[in-house]
Length: 122
Image (cartoon, rainbow, N blue to C red):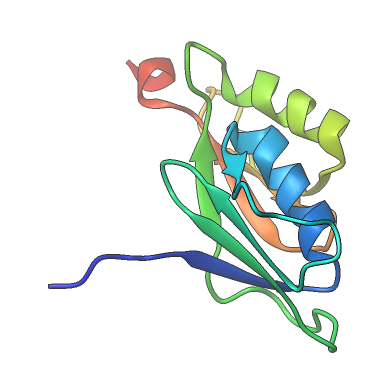
């Protein structure tokens, strides 16, 4: 058996991307984080690690995060909140019956999907 230690993002600006995901998830930056660090750890229910790399993103992510609202927020409320934090909508796959998801891009173009939470589907 294994444990997932981190989900790691290669990126150009680790601190800025980590702060986007901090605001999105409510996680906390590692206490020793500095704005100029090449590696920034975001601690939370899932630990996200942001590492500076010289090359930019060139293709679709092979792995991505699926996220849901917490505390009663809906998929649609979270899409609006994430837009306000700097994400963009890449593909809207919401269905008229309320199903589906929204594929969004974080500020560096990494895809993630905003899905309905369990309590929305009940």
